Length: 256
Image (cartoon, rainbow, N blue to C red; front, side, top):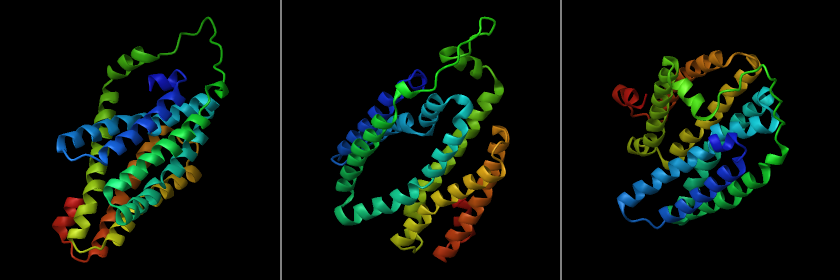
């Protein structure tokens, strides 16, 4: 993030996309579980350089921090369709070519399309000019000073715990649904449909927030976000139960 804040978003994001593509190529040839773990860990680090936070920083530099909200909202709105597009696509590639060749195709997409678009679209020369600081104004916190300032505040530590717990729960649900649902009798097409619906559900929530609370404080946004997550999670659990027709209360509780 520090490099992106300094105006190196093009190098960071396009380089990470190319690196992730190369790692997918290596993954397609792996036969050792420890090498697999190392590859997945590396891809996770590269993903962090390409995920929403880096993109938000790039948008803020392009249009200015005061005007970035609209662009960030649009980015998250369209980003919600990622699972809707790629879950069926990945399943199609696996069905047609096998998982190894599917990884090669995904690696090529990362390198050519993602890396190319990042390199072309992110242009530091077009960044919003930074307003000159007045002499009486204190310099803004940045770099290590900003990190130290944040880590000394209990609310920041509590936020870290909450977000890590949330993402861990979401990841556990997402990656275990695929093997769980076929075991309960749901066909592959049904599993892909259930997982692909996650994206439109996220988009629907973001559209509601955009129309009904466009200028609401971030704190209120996050509160409504987690409240809607709970409602959507309950509806999703019910939908999975109806789709499978065999899940009992213990399985629903485990999924939730």
